[in-house]
Image (cartoon, rainbow, N blue to C red; front, side, top):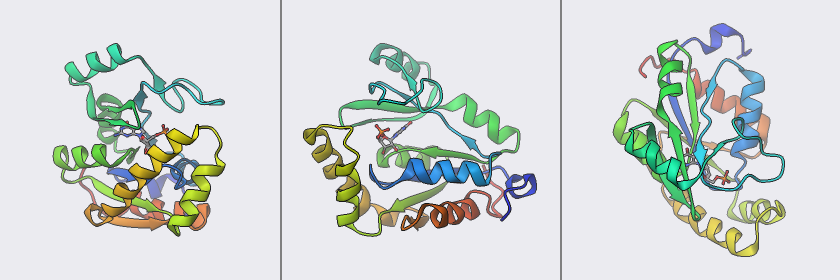
Length: 195
Ligand code: 5GP
């Protein structure tokens, strides 16, 4: 697939999930390079920005009050609490992309993926898996941006996320970022024509 506009023509919603540290951000960055036309949903979160994260680009960083108001106003397609912070996907930009015929991708955790499945059964759920559990532990520990308590909460969450692999339509193994991104791209722009 060459990433030209023809490759990105079919509107489809893809949910990418996978444990923290598996490399979702790197794979998505490579996917954007291969196919910039895909719409990448920017989530809202109550988590504090990490060094280098840009508001409006990596996340919309908001406080818990604003998050609650968005839930009440029905502005979120899905939302979840993860490792002590709230995360959610604003619904309007996703719908606009699909209405324009642009494939959309959400990078979210398991509870959110389940909500999308319930709300939009035609969405495609993709799980990004590490090559091994040991590799995941190594990646998460070496990131060095979180304290050990946070890392252990994330590893705990990772176990249950990986155990839910059977609920997903497709599994992509992240042994190397480019190969994983190309695999994901074929799924995102696949022949399916639903939402
Ligand atoms: P992080 O804090 O490392 O950026 O993200 C933590 C987890 O939250 C990741 O598994 C990420 O996929 C997930 N996440 C990010 N945005 C959303 C969202 O909008 N909804 C849900 N349910 N999970 C999200």
